[in-house]
Length: 411
Image 1 (tube, one colour):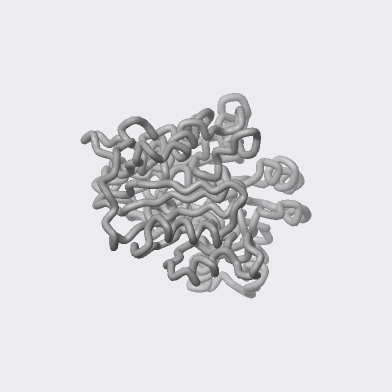
Image 2: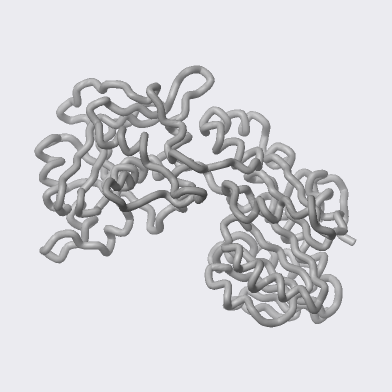
């Protein structure tokens, strides 16, 4: 299986524990498949791949590794439920999710790939997976893109003080899968910190204010709303207060032109207020997806059903994006580009939303947003960012294609 030059450096390293911190689309999936096959090519080996969830493990690698090893006539038996391959040489490859990491306890392993390690609980490694390598003398390859200064930074630094550890850091461009002009475009679209983390694989400090890219350059008074102008509404269903932001779509992004804050309210009252302010405007609502089941009204309808019955178009993801992804999407929209333009503006009258952007912060020494307290800034933040995350997401990694070939063959 051909590897890029950067991938070769990782694959050929003899150290027992390897940590590869890589930019998006570097080709981590291809490298993981190659390394799993390499270790499983020896007889009677137990080899596992661990992703943050079972679903991710299946989506990222299952079809690809199954297709590859079947084509090599290596496979004796396939278990679709357990995502396992029994090989003709007595070795076994299993794909696992770490959402319930206690289930990973048990049999000793000869080789482990931990993918997107920054999104996995550190206890999965320290308490569960690391002991499974002790009696076998097994190896582990950690792969992922940084997520602030969490435990992946700690294991990345192990090579400085511990024997048999080696760490690598490669940018997206060094992976050889993404054209330079695409990376340059991403640099224009993303705020500097998000770009460095996602494309240059740097460890960024995320303490302090969450909307760090927001500033005076984003505040711009809006023109009057035309009676039939299409509008976008972001909606958080918390009943105290019911919080919504009203946007118009611009050529480059979004302009927040109004906000609705109603204490001790419900979704029916929110609908009424939207229609009082914008009686004839076509409305598209981007709500909290929990509204599919949640009811803040007494008539038995779900929050989202109430919005649909009001004649609004409703758009939402079936599952919430990860908190960090929504934060990255927002800051990438807020940031001031090199040409002094920005893709996000907000009218100065949206005082609650602006205050939220200026004061919503992380808990000290964590990447967890601070919620609750005497003033909870999360509600306006959520209302503001649901449409941003849906319409302008920071793209996540998809199934990797094979990288540029350099004639390398697996031993």
